[in-house]
Image 1 (cartoon, rainbow, N blue to C red):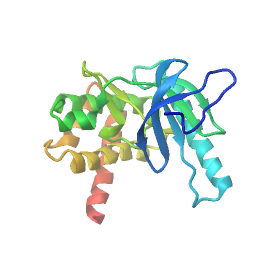
Image 2 (image 1 turned 60 degrees about the horizontal axis):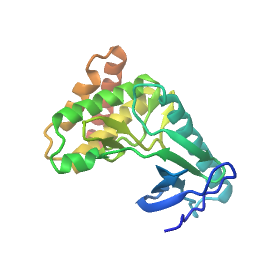
Image 3 (image 1 turned 90 degrees about the vertical axis):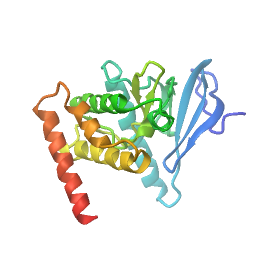
Image 4 (image 1 turned 120 degrees about the vertical axis):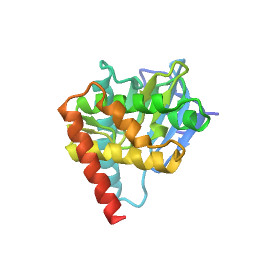
Length: 222
């Protein structure tokens, strides 16, 4: 199958697509090979309902933030894919392939449980301590390998130096995900918070307090 996005750069060979991994509203994700190595290509989709100039500007902004986040995380303890190549104008990014399956799949087949949920909470706190909110924290956006190591993916909605509200919203998004996709995990978000507060400081507690306030607002208005 040839590449549907025809990624060409004079300083690199053609991207070669193996298959489509995900077709979303904002982006399409492909697995394949970059310079002979396994990799993943994420291509931002054009939104025809938006004015072309606005659409291009939003794609550039979001891709630029994603690149900055990945670059910032590269030398930290927060595991994420490596950035291999990017074209801001064309709206694509190439990342290293991460071994494993999504935590969503692992929980569904019973391969993961409470320990991994707590570990996920700890990983989220490490991300927040670096001044980054994820923006789409679900069990689909973390990969777990055979050794139980967790890797965060998809930073397309991330924010750098976010307000505490954004950090609390990360936990709220995950809370809604656990309720909808993993209802068999009793008190799932409480297990996440246990991991989030493990070996933490007052800043982590402040985020949890904000999450509880958000959860209270959602419950009240729901």
